[in-house]
Each structure stands twice: as C-alpha cells, then as structure tokens.
Image (cartoon, rainbow, N blue to C red):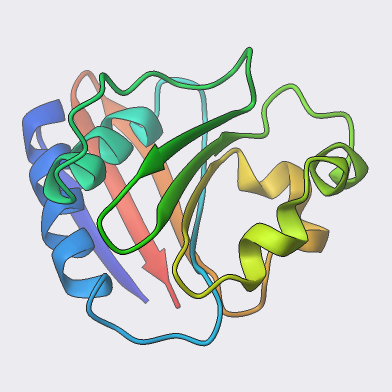
Amino acid sequence: MQSIITESPKETEKFAAQLAKKLINKKNNKALVLALEGELGGGKTTFIKGFLKALKVIEKVLSPTFVLIHKHHLKSGDLYHIDAYRLKSEKDLLKLGIKEIFNNPKNIVLIEWADRVKKIIPKTAIWIRFEHLEKNRRKITIEQ
C-alpha cells in the first residue's frame, strides 16, 4: 500500500500522469483496471484527467455520470472511463458488456465509485482511495 498527499488539483493530475506512465508498460493477460473510490469532490475525476493526459487523450475529460461510460481510443487499445455513482447494482454494468471489456488485455478501465460495484471488479484491479483532507489537499492511497 502506498499513500501520497497532494496539495492541489495540479499535483493530483501530475501524480496520476506518473502512475499512468508506470502502469501502461506492464503486460497483462486482462485489462488494466483502476478502481477509484472516495467521497464526492475527493479528486477522482481530476486524477483521471491527469491519467488520460499522460496517455495523450485529447478529448475533454468529464465525469460520465449521466452516460455511465466514456470510451477513448488509444494507440494500443481503448480506455473506458466508467462512473458507477448512479448504478443500482453490478447487473447494470454487466448489461453493458463489462466482462468483455475486462477480458481484453488491450483495454484500460478507470472506474469512479468502484466500491458500488465491488463484486464484479477483477481481483487484479488496482484500488485507489481518495480522502479529502481540506480545501485542495487530498490523501491518495493505492492498493495493489
């Protein structure tokens, strides 16, 4: 388990970019899954912005609360940004074909509010917890 304190959204994005560069070179036989959890305003979407910037995603990054999934095309595969906040159960995500997405080793999957769909998150997922300390300070804990 690793924890870091960030002092601003810019620092959170920078940390996410560093982590992205470290993780994308790892070879997996399934998708790389990052399961993000934390309170509203905890820094999850800011983290994802930094992660996507590092992967050269040029589209504007928005939390997919109302559409549930945003798909971004990368050189080596696809990145899925999922927001589970409004899901009633894991079944909602299963209906969207999440198992197939998880099984493709070329995919990267970032799930906000992953604790709401914990039962279907792969055991190989990297859990990232966000804790809002004060104004712009965040504690980010990574558990692999």
